[in-house]
Image (cartoon, chains in turn purple, red):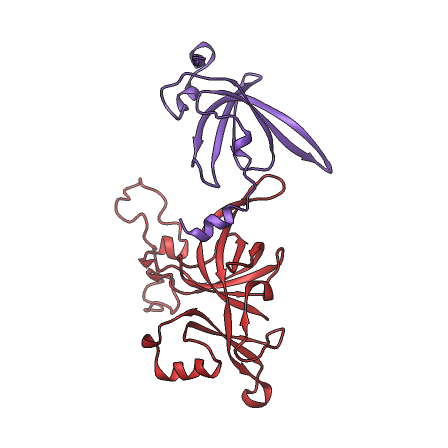
Length: 120
Length: 206
């Protein structure tokens, strides 16, 4: 990639170092700033990370899936987006692939992900 | 109308205050040198000619070397005339991005579109094709269909849209917002896409 493009991308405020290190299968809680008129409030979106795409580029995104009132909701966040206030890591998941699209065909018990026990 | 000559660097994305990603194009605009000033008395109209991009002297013709010498500069790759430039400039002055453009302004970008080669009517003119694949249709899904009537007029009218060479024509994209100006490297970031491939010349008009 051109050095000049990197220069432009460097002007985006990069807060990635403030976020925890998370990946596919992890359960995270994303705090999203929402603007309603002139007011700004924070909404939380908690769910399983399905994938992280375009790693280490200015267009990096991650997909979070959750079951809301029995309906599955998937939301894609650009990781450099200024509307993300905070990301909390709730639980690490043990998965064997980087893209968890198989969750879409599963419900209830079948959609569980084993917890990854990290040795202290 | 004022403007500059530039070079397309490539595309990336920036974020606005609402957290939405915006597709944007990075352009290296300038520094341009005023290589000729056209005046009402001498030429009948007002304009200035700008030059952009370094060119080796051995690759330039003698007449062009002489032309650039008059403006006290080295040979340039691209020379464009801008009519009715808003601010008057003297021969040989160098213009950078910050002299012309500001963040938040709207600009028009002119470039030469990528050549697509010989293309059929579906891609070139947006024809819908035949549509179905059943009812005996087997080998003309992307054909134009009829190009006219029969014994009257006994010919095909001029201007009927058909397949042919596509692209490589001059295209102007209007009203692109300037998202960012970086003065040190003469970088201009506009929202959206602009015609042409990377490293192709662009004319940015205000």
